[in-house]
Image 1 (spheres, one colour):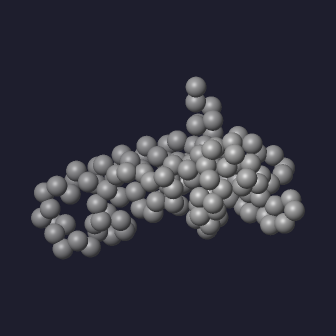
Image 2 (cartoon, helix red, strand yellow; image 1 turned 90 degrees about the vertical axis):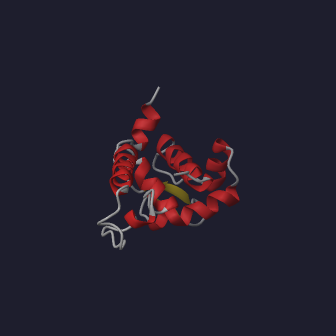
Length: 135
């Protein structure tokens, strides 16, 4: 599995929103500047995070973005699934039911199932708050 730039930048954006949270919405320009990420690139990420319910958006003069989920409840897994899609290491595990015609005789299936389980447990075990407090 390789996490794309989109996933990495989305996580940086979410951590930035958590670190700078307050009553006001935060502009994309501020986030882009603090994170040294192109504003245009962040504009591509915002719809994914918004659709997943992870951020709130506000248009207009005092517009911008803020977390829609408390930082202690938003996990790395949430952010990566919003931007990367499934974290499954093989196609047959992408859906809740494995419909692969070889699943009953696949001698390596347990390897991929265990990797998938460990990956999800790891990413779902780290919150934005954990990242902020990590020293």
